Length: 313
Image (cartoon, rainbow, N blue to C red; front, top):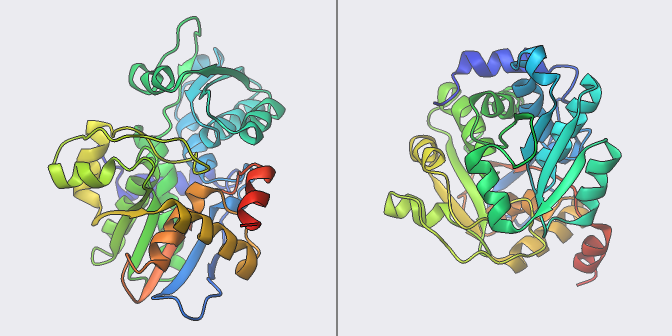
């Protein structure tokens, strides 16, 4: 199921007062292959776009179910979104994270009152599929495979069209697909000729080969500083949505993402995590084409040690 434009507009009303309307600014690079704009979701209260989908999804859960508490599987940003909303509602919150999750995100979850359970990567990924975790009785909030989450994320597409109606391409980091498909659903309804691309990184880019093959493919995932995206495979239902909504998936090299992180800090004074900078890396490499290109900077939650290391390279 793909969210309709009406559902995305309703989500915009639902999450008003929780999620910020983030700015759209020009990337300060004169020799870029395109006129690149940045949609700064790193400026959300939790440092990422996840607050949008979380707020909308939890608003559609009956109060008696919410009272039992909520559960999600996340490498960090969705966890913070769920924990933020749970804290506001005064309900318990449990987060299953991969044991590779960065400490900066783990500490942020704990600050918001979330209970963290670390699990091996395969167990963590299985939680997405089963939508449950042994011993935890709570309502599961899926990070991407949920129409309400995608509708909340789709509000970014509404804002892009309001601020830059002549946009020609939009590049969106692909983690599980909820962000890319949500934004693309809004753009397809409002401007069908706008090119919409997912952005992946070479250390775990299953969408690109899956789109070519027409079925979910398994790739060799390698942990890196790009921890907000990258995985071994794609959910079949998310691939089906991507086939309908996206023009393709662009894959950045790890050093290109590192360069984009440095460039964002140097030229625009923006802190972006690796996932958030992946869209910029693809656009700077010319993969999104020419014209007016919007890059969604999905988050800025990066360990300071990692950031300092990247800036010092």
